[in-house]
Image (cartoon, rainbow, N blue to C red; front, top):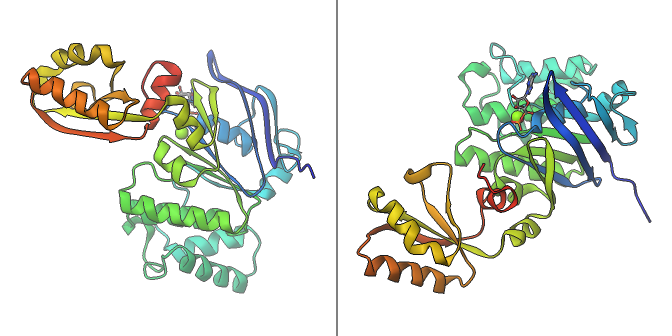
Length: 314
Ligand SMILES: Nc1ncnc2c1ncn2[C@@H]1O[C@H](COP(=O)(O)OP(=O)(O)O)[C@@H](O)[C@H]1O
Ligand SMILES: [Mg+2]
């Protein structure tokens, strides 16, 4: 049996003045799955999400949620979706419980039902202990969890999460990932934007990579990593002044990839032969008397995926 995708986006375009921000985005999401929209800062992720959630009107193309057109049937779309934006929507002065009751009341739950729903959500999101504290005393992770709770007061058909973990510490990030997995298990379809391949890796069934307003790749995490190819050998130099020498020394082994931290960060090269590539690098640096601070093998990162797709890093 063929079931139409729950989200369908065809050739979506958006510009602000002379700046073209979306250049014809195409994507589909199957019901009950998580789509990761991966891209660097400024790629157009938030603009795309805002078009799909009716906060912005696209200039061209078409987008439907459960068959409802986001431009022509915005009310219907809004009734089916939840949105957690990049910037928290909760009120700082209110407590967590007051915020959730407020959101519930706005969604027309009765007083009693609103209280019960608030307690349910506080429990589910591990916020019960902090429930009666003002939100301004919350950590970043707690705030994001509350924001997420507020967006599922009435269980949405499709939940949009715009960079839900950007700026969070690793532990808070893990907690949020657990919550997202839980929501998926409840059958909620999720579209999540992120700058981190690792996050998409942990949560997404399918990924679209966008750069400069265009989809430049689609697939599962493994398919994307396979496009980049096998493993990478990553090294850090003990002395930054050896940097140029090392680039020369390794140049015949493949492209030497420098990340966004430049000389301060690690250098990587593709390691198709895994440990053999690593050994070769160690031997070459040793015979040139260049000390290493660190060396390891790793799977491709988002940076590598980007570099291989676009020729530039994130
Ligand atoms: N309201 C706006 N007016 C003008 N330019 C905008 C506006 N919103 C976003 N942009 C520009 O659109 C591009 C994409 O932004 P955005 O969708 O926020 O990217 P992302 O969420 O991937 O970081 C950026 O270059 C940004 O400066
Ligand atoms: Mg954004």
